[in-house]
Length: 451
Image 1 (cartoon, rainbow, N blue to C red):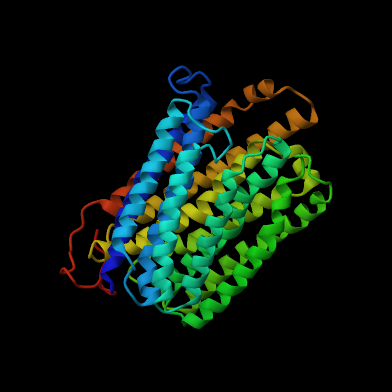
Image 2 (cartoon, rainbow, N blue to C red):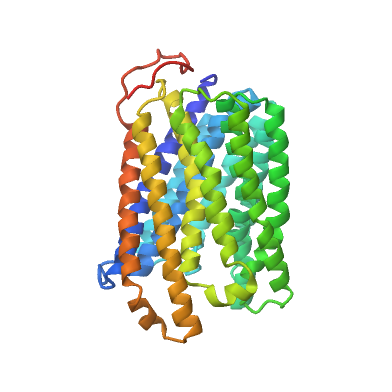
C-alpha cells in the first residue's frame, strides 16, 4: 500500500459489510413470509421487511463505492486523499442517516415511494454526505494524475449525485411521479452505476493482470459509451404501462435490447485481459470475484433483463416473479460481486498481511453464487407459472400465490445458503490471519497463500 490515506477505505468497508449482513437478514425474513404468510405478521409486516431489505442494499453499495474510491484514488491520482477527516465525517453522516431511516421504517415512518422511502430530512443528510464525498475526491483528482479509471469513476459518481436530486421531486400525479422516479432508480443501476462498475473492474484488472494500462483504458471507454448509449433511452422499458406516450414502447424495446451489449463487452473485457496478462497474482480470491462479476452481471442484467424487456412480452410478465428473478441476479452480479471483489483485493493490504483466508473466501464465492443462481431459476419458474395462471388464464392473485408455495420454499432455502456463504466471506475478510507484514511495509506479491 503506497499511500497512508488509503486506509480511509477500511471503516467504509466495515460499515458496508455490516449493512450487507443486515440486508441478508431482512431478505431471509421476507423470504420466510412468502413460504409461511403469517410469519411475524403482527411483529413486523412484510412491507417493512421488504423496504428494509431493498434500502440496505442501496445504502451499503453506496458506502462500498465510497470506500473503493478512497482506496484507489490515491494510487490513480498519485497523491494522498485531500482530507481524511472529511471522509470520516461524511461516513458518520451517511451511516447515521441510513440507520435513522432503517429504524424509522420499523415504526412505519417513510414516504412510501419504492426505493426512495427515506424521509425528507434523511434525504438531505444523504445529499450533504454525498457532496462532501464528491468534494473530497474531486479535490484529490484535481491536484493529481488524471487517468481513464479515476475520470470515468468520478463521472459516474457525479452523475449518480445529479440523478439523486430527482428523489426530492414528488409530484401528486402518479404517472408523472413514475416518469421521474425512474430517473433515479433506472438511471442509477442501468446507467451511471455501470460507469462506476466498469472503472472499478478496470482498476482490478490493471492491478492483477499486469496488462498495459492503455489497453484496458481503451476497452473502458468503449464500455462507457455503450452503457450510456443504451441505458439512457433504455429507461423507456419502464414507461410502457404508466400512461406515457405509446412511442416509448418501441424506443424502450430497442434500447433495452441494446443494454445487453455493454454487459457482454465487460465479460469479453475481463477474460481477454485475464488471458493476455499474468495469471499468477497471489490474490486468487479477488481474481475469482473480478472474473465472476461480469459473467453473472451479463446473465442477470443482460439475459434475464432481455427475457422480459420487449413490450409485447412485458405486457404479460410485468410485476411478476420474473422481475424478482432478474433483479436479484442483476444486482448480485453487477454490484454485490464487484464490491466483494474490491474488498477481497483491498483487505490484505489494509490489514498489512499477505492474501489470506483465500480458500474460505472462494468457498463463499461458490456457495453464494450457486445459491443466487438457484434462487434466480426458482423465481423464474415461479414467474412463468404466475404469468400463465394470472395474466393468461385470469386467476386472481391470491389463488395464483397459493400455487407457488414450493417455489417459495426453494427460494428460502437458497437464501439460507446465501447467508452461509456470506458468513464465510465475513470471516475471511475480518477473521484472524497468521502472517503480518511489518508496519509501514507493503503487501507481498508472491508467496504461498496463508489460511
